Length: 68
Image (cartoon, rainbow, N blue to C red; front, top):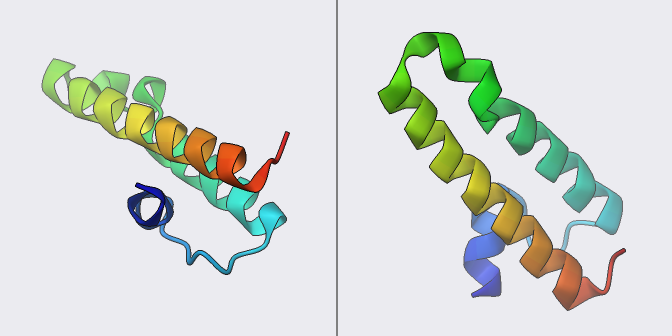
């Protein structure tokens, strides 16, 4: 659902397209599995799940807004 996609990226649905992209980049860096590889498998697995959720949310918003 699109509302949860915005929540995952920690932005409002009124955010501009460029703000959506900025929020995605910020969250992608924050949760990228390579960033936490040194912290152990469990944390890396959690990061992978978060990263996938962030990517899915961004793709859903892009599709809804027709952002390329």
